Length: 201
Image (cartoon, rainbow, N blue to C red; front, side, top):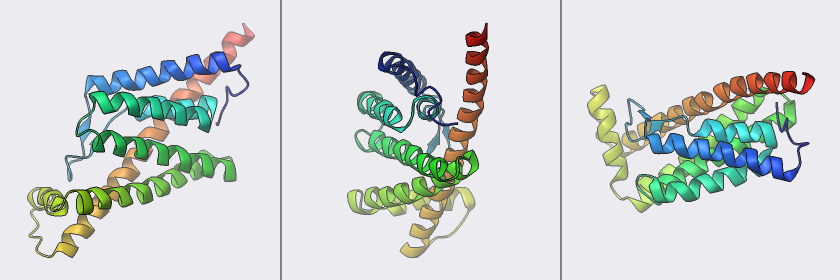
């Protein structure tokens, strides 16, 4: 599934994009994320699902528009702004980009999911390095303290800390990619079937 409503006129597309983006903002406003147990500052949430559905329904261009609108709102209502909202924006954008590349190559959701995970992991690993090493000196020690406490590890060297923080950040982003894409495809398939029934009736 990709750009299944791409044939609609621009007005209908923008209405659909606006509604789904508004839903993502509502989810963000509800503040019901689930912390990643190993690094609790990383949080799973469902805000990415409506934006990913925009990709499935209307295509990459409109999903980017939705992401930008979401980012702008998140800058005003999000935590740890502007870094937190910007990291979220890049996570969403990398997921959308990876899926688009994978799906166009294979026309399959599995390849799209794998490409999404790869692109997201690469982008977010780079961004975490920038934030935790360059922008926040001591950030790696801070992040590693969660790992030490939760897993009971005695981390001494900076290299150990950096490697573990990066590894668990990668695991988080892979899991979040799955949590975003699998439900999005399932929900979209249900909506598409219902839309077809409405058209036929």
